[in-house]
Image 1 (cartoon, helix red, strand yellow):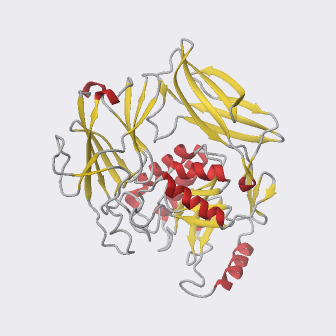
Image 2 (cartoon, rainbow, N blue to C red):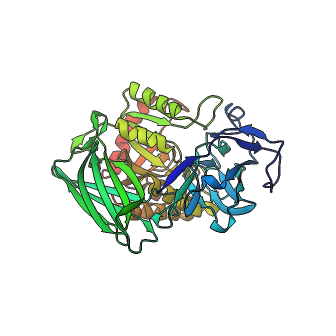
Length: 457
């Protein structure tokens, strides 16, 4: 069976070495994860914080590797990370806000093994973000785990995805729930699905592990209805061999429908549902972005206290802890990648990989209704390369997830006739009337003008 083991404790850290060590150091700083080296110097609003490559290392005993396949799983390391196992590089990951995994080689497991992770937040021209009004905290600032599985298991190699996709479609009083899982080495196996309402199993299905997609109807479905009633079901998938489950995964999901109408706004489950809320970054004083569950929960509680119904998660993928809390609270989310402020022609592949990670890792969250392609990327104008980058991302989002909309955050000086604003399904504007200039009374006339010119956007 799958086992997940936290390895957050008892790491060694150095900001002075130039390469990965071959043996356990004796003079490094001892610390626990999550950690950032910019918890203090990254919080004064300036650009003089430490941006460099730093190293983390610890020993892993053979007894911690209980599976036929064993993975190192990192939930977030900013912004480029390389994982070394017994001196050999396993993976290089570009992007500081998403989960990624490294497969431990079966032929290189000793009684005691050296795990080293380098993390680099220096400036470059191919990993987003590079220009923004927030700190690019360096460090392993989310959890690190060992995931151990049998040789046949639910997939762990595709863009950090959980291995299961649940797509509910509301159909009158019912919901048709399509479940698909992804199996490594599926020969001769089946997948058994269950849907739970609380502790009760309300539906089951069994499918061949080579073709795992199936649709189950929930009659008189209990809808996920925003803050009014954020009801969640759970779907479980078990990989069956000779009548026994050898791997099991699960996810919560919500049944809901929504539309975004140019005249009526956001409509949830057939009723107009005003979106009023906040934007949220993942940092706290002295901690930077190395947040605990309690920090995430405190943010949610404050957001709910002011009566918000929505959050824009600026400007990158947030912690799975936070998405789960939003599902449970009924908050409507805009989730986006850090394609922000300055278009980099050499960064296209990174926007694609970060978007694939965002969608695959967060597909099952009912709180998310739009995928954000970019933020204020047209502040300096747009060219064909920028437009093509957006078209690629927009088409890819629709292909990977036809159930949600795409959006961008344009900025006031962006020409409202620009082809850039006509690419996504939904256009949003960052206006600073009353902040950098003008006054807040300018918002209404601006939007009236925009709506007159683009009545269907």
